[in-house]
Length: 190
Image (cartoon, rainbow, N blue to C red; front, side, top):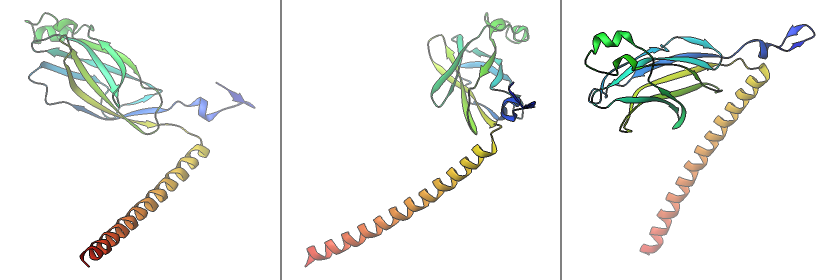
């Protein structure tokens, strides 16, 4: 950590915090999956830094699941193999040969983001079918300098003002277009 005149820099001393805002499990997977669970993260968990744990299990009904993919905005962040031992599932699914190794456990590096990010978790079956099993919404409690925060506030205010001006201009254009079309149709009738 950098120290300036014996004082630790605030931006370097503290890491951003990631809060798990929501974990939404898909309900439309019963035809293709025997079951799945997301053990972590859970809604309300807060993690320091850019890494969150991802742990759980998933089992295909007829076709084995070979991986779990984590994506955000259609961009693949990580592919995770299902090979974590789950002794608890052997008792629940004794007739399923791969039940013991149906778990996943990985630290997921999120990278940097400013406010919120949505992650999708997709099970990849052996036949390459993909099933969205859950979505996770994360919020960043980034520790940013007061100067950057002030710049963001000014930028948001300017953006709102520009949107209002654009909306007003579009309304005026629609009014003028309507007047023009009305005047043009009257001249054609004459």
